[in-house]
Amino acid sequence: MKHFARVTTLAAALLSASLITGTVHAQLAPSAQPAAAPATAPAEARKANIVIIGTGGTIAGAGASAINTAAYQSAVVPVDKIIASVPEVSKVANVKGEQIFQIGSESFNNERLLKLGKRVSELLKQPDVDGIVITHGTDTIEETAYFLNLTLKSDKPVVVVGSMRPGTALGADGALNLYDAVLVASNPTSRGKGTLVVLNDEIHTGRDVTKSNTFKTETFRSAFGPLGYVVEGRSQYYRLPARPHTVQTEWDIDKIDKLPEVAVVYAYGNVNPASIDAAVKSGAKAIVYAATGNGSVGDYMVEPLKAARAKGVQIVRASRTGSGVVIRNAEQPDDKYDWIVTDDQMPQKARILMALALTKTNDSKALQQVFWKY
Ligand code: DGL
Image (cartoon, rainbow, N blue to C red; front, side):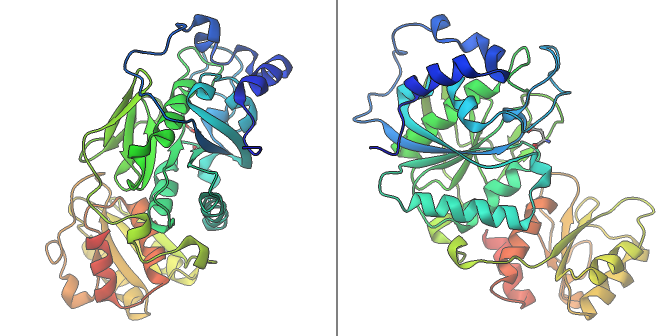
């Protein structure tokens, strides 16, 4: 297995050379760990080979002092140094780091999403790769995870992981999250469950997970709950994703070179109708209207949305509430206006699904079925 450096050696070298991670994850220093594996740890036949792709975010962040849990610089620690700071991962997997970006996740755009997806796909095809972990900023982790969940053509586990606190902070969560992510990616029972997001002891499906708080470590939630937990070196599932993903979908990352422009327009009292026209003029092929409540649309916004539809732009009614379904023909006559409703998907994730759907069809009825299916 010449591609996979054993982390124990790498960790020693990088830890001694590291300027940034000198204080990182001190609470997880090897000497502080019990010598024996937890009694609940599964007995693996062989260690899995896991590639850890670094993209930046807080898990690669560093603050000026240990009390900087929420004000710090993200995306500065290279992925190899992050790996080296958590030597426990080498006990569960042979890991290899690869830096693809060093950015805050708010800087992800379609080009970066496609580049990441294509690289993950390439790695998943290698017979000596058992799974992938992607370190990522938490702000848009749900969009990347949903995109990969819909476009990767492999059963192998892909786990996206981040942290809410930089490694330099008191109570830093990145080390345990990374360890847990590697555990999940190494666990054969993670195969066939789509792209997963692991943080705060929980395993979420990329479809459902969303960030719900700006600073707390307990920020990720799925409307229907996590798929499972990671506790004491053991990952355990309790339910399965219901909607099609990865090998079951109609999109293949290897065949997508460009994503159509889809705009999200956020509704509020006194929303400016010109925002719809601006989206149309900027070349949007669809507008996800992050409407109030059950996708309700202000009386003065109906005509601009109808005008956009008349120009061929698809209109998707979503909700800014953060949960629940938008019911077709309830708040607005979708059949009459030829609009689409998002089902339960958040506006930012409806944007991903719509962009993918538009690579296959521009038929509004078919697009509606896509929203109800995925
Ligand atoms: N700028 C944010 C990002 O990369 C940092 C927040 C985080 O990673 O938790 O998403």
